[in-house]
Amino acid sequence: MTLDRSLLLAPSYEVAPFLLGSILTVDSPEGSVSLRITEVEAYHGSEDPGSHAFRGRTNRNAVMFGEPGHLYTYFTYGMHTCANVVCGPDGQASGLLLRAGEVIDGIDLARSRRVTSRKDFDLARGPARLTVAAGITLADGGADLAASRIRLELGSGVANFATGPRTGVSGAGGTTEFPWRFWIPGDRTVSPYKAHAPKRRLESSGGN
DNA sequence: CGTCGGATGGTCT
DNA sequence: GACCATCCGACGA
Image 1 (cartoon, chains in turn green, purple, orange):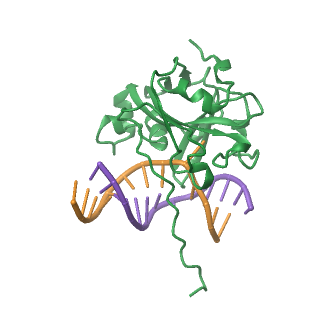
Image 2 (tube, helix red, strand yellow):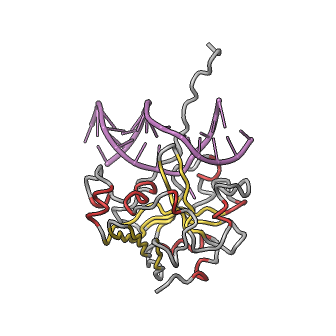
């Protein structure tokens, strides 16, 4: 089954329930890893202050404005890579951040990539952990999820899902005004919620 | 189980 | 030069 791109044409916050329970498979020379997606967050263009696309198109976020069914990757906190599934029609920046998944195939390979995980449910529990476990890197930005080493098999959604404010998002985008975090209730692979932690300002030089 | 702080560099103002 | 769509280890219960 190849990915039906038309199922991703709606805004990401409408597509989100259908991405839960879907299967993401990543091939590599060492083998393949498959994840069952258990948690996502929606980001939606210029109306959404939490989105990378809020201030318009830039070199970094260009993929988000493109055709649905591609992968938008970004580098953050100086060391982590996160991945989104692009949604919405060409020209509209909408995406679903892959926040957590359950490894259902290639678990030995995933363990070897995530040696700090003590439990299997921790392998892809968190957006940056997920990319490591799956073997997704920054270079996979723009990958076509219908025809590349990374493939998405959309399911029919899950019977029950929960929603809430997005994790780690600062400002208005992190409030209940945008309850765009979606997860499968009771699943241990879902990451713990954390509010945005503002960093205390260091004393500037010369200030005394 | 929980909270807390440091790491570390690209991106945009 | 401030701000991150985060993770990990340390420590306390």
